[in-house]
Length: 112
Image 1 (tube, rainbow, N blue to C red):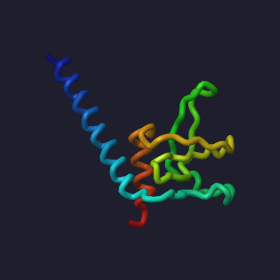
Image 2: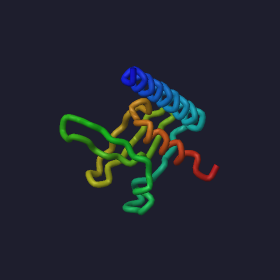
Image 3: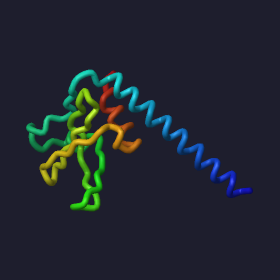
Image 4: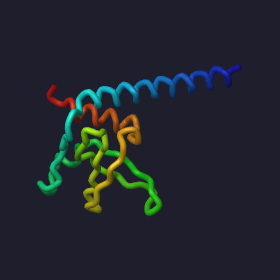
């Protein structure tokens, strides 16, 4: 009986988390009508870079890489920059974690 209740709570949690992801993505879609540069990487090392939203990737070359989100395109592609490596990586907004979506939404609504 307790296991059934626990499983139901877990299922409800993931249902709600899914709704949060959809809501955040929809809000970001409403904001992004053109390419938005969040951070100009040509400016050089800056403390503001470390406050950027981040996302993680897992690929065949490394367990994971961390990228600072520096741009979002009108097609909702997220462009990340790895300061340590100096390379960029682009992925679709649907590949972001809920935490990264939330951080991106907060960044896009700063001052509003």
